[in-house]
Length: 344
Ligand SMILES: [Zn+2]
View 1 (tube, rainbow, N blue to C red):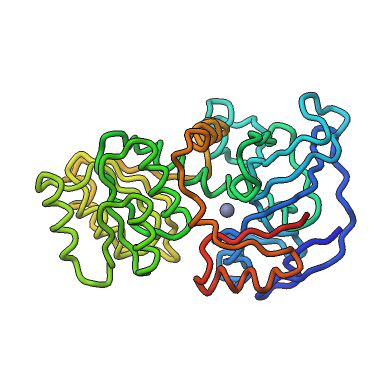
View 2: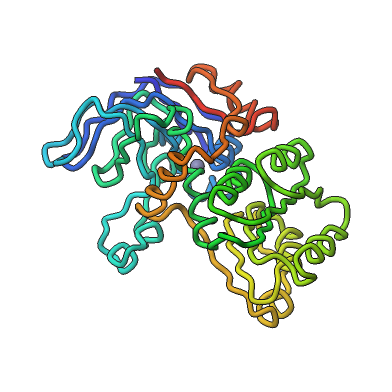
């Protein structure tokens, strides 16, 4: 089969021929039809410090996909060949404290496809049966291919409980833009956004943000947002940028007793005023990792079926697998937002 692998401890990926995988007894073999390129794949492509410390050379990359079941292991009970499916990319044995108490997404033994084990930038991928997610027939392939990041956005928005609340989303990259449409669909009253990319700020407004501020233009916007929210600040902060300055600005815009959900990953350790921004503020801070298995998936499906999510302008490009170089270039340059590879 065709596969995109991390062929050396350095930049880029290589297009190679690999044997088709054989599913273990409890695994499902899926013929991949579409796969999303993630910010994580960009890190792996560029071979930054994080990738160098985490990604095994030789691994098949990619973790966001949709496809069709081609074969099942001998102990698989529920699914059969022919079914269109996506899958949760975080796998666990399911035996630790969190896995056994409804929080498998933060299990201590989590291994992720395309990061710790072979992924989906290939014609076929194997995943455990319990990770399989049957795709509702009305959901298009390009949307099902990006359930993974959309699930990140849904998990963040739901964890922060945005209904009838004012929300600040700092960072409107792929997941931040998804969070705008998800927060709107989930009943956020007013959504404010910040970023340093004017076209994405414009798109955030189109998707439902009442104001979108360029964070490079000083801190005046913080006062404006606080004023717009009874002079006290927003109820909820969804931090999606990982930028050091965004943490400080975002918490300053948050009201006392508000909730901050943090998804963006800082590239290095950051300096942060805990006293003013968290302790005296009495706010609640949530770390967001992955998607809840499988509560987030059910919520995401319901939001999609509501017809209220606007993803067409976020999923901007699709390329055949062979054109992966153009696909990565389109994503890295910022010309495209969410880029999907087509295997079919
Ligand atoms: Zn991803």
